[in-house]
Image (cartoon, rainbow, N blue to C red; front, side, top):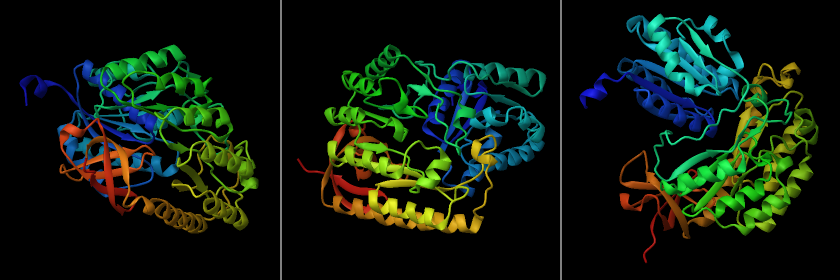
Length: 457
């Protein structure tokens, strides 16, 4: 290690949650490094999994860091519980390392605000999603005065394009185009934590895409809590497909109300647009959809899926499902199970409902007992695993065009990439292939990952 690096204060940055949090962490890392900090990033976690190993890893590295910063998620109760667990662990760590500074950023900060200071006296600072620039000042204020400090404001927009963003991958970039949401889904905390919809002007989005392409980025993923509500979204997609150097454009996440035929036609016309479309259904029951205020019926959702599949043959469809929403009857659950069988999504994120304080649904009686939620959740997962495997198995023996992202974390001997439908593919290869498109012969399916080898030319 260089002498100057040894003197730089070290920040351990841990990310939880969605793609927008990935982007915010990249921006935070760039801001901190420009201010003289050395950032240790341990990767990202979503709210689907919990690992004792992840907790242990933070515990082992605490002694090597001066600041622990966690980028948090509030979408589900379980995601918050994991942060609480880590804060408890860090409280114990500060007994032996009293100068350790602990901070939070992200949606939990926006939801709970200064109440977190009262619950966790070991927490030193918090920064809101619209205040990332203040990170270095907050840390310095804590170091100088040893007081709890926060910068949380609701106005403005959290997105600011910058060449300071630190990316681990050299050929893919997150490109947020809007933030917040104007929908009224009763279960969702996003309007509270991210505010109303605010969009980046088209000219700025295109300018940023051009800058990224000039830096060697070949694939951009457009981000927004409700990305396809962006004004003129189909036209924006077409404009970005015309940016020289970009080979692929994808986006997440969409709302069914804004999934229009015009959007589907734009995807069909532009082969650079990813052939994966994530469209959250949440429930197959019209009665539950109405209680959720999803603004569509199952028949309307199904009609849009049929349109898309007719216009873009072979497109991969994924979705979100909530099991055990308040008032969900057995027949509602069965309707959701039938919906999975009828639509046959390539994949689905299926979660048990948890109350989010401050949402309209928090006023409903959470009347589905936890054991029943778990049974329904497990049943839907079983259905979806079978369907996903049935959809994927026919690809074994075929060759797919794969964008090579880098080496697999499970071993440097294998590369990892994504097909045009964003299916994960592992295969042996050299570092020189990273950032290129390669034809890979699929030889086996391991869980939801394809394993193969480069097609002979």
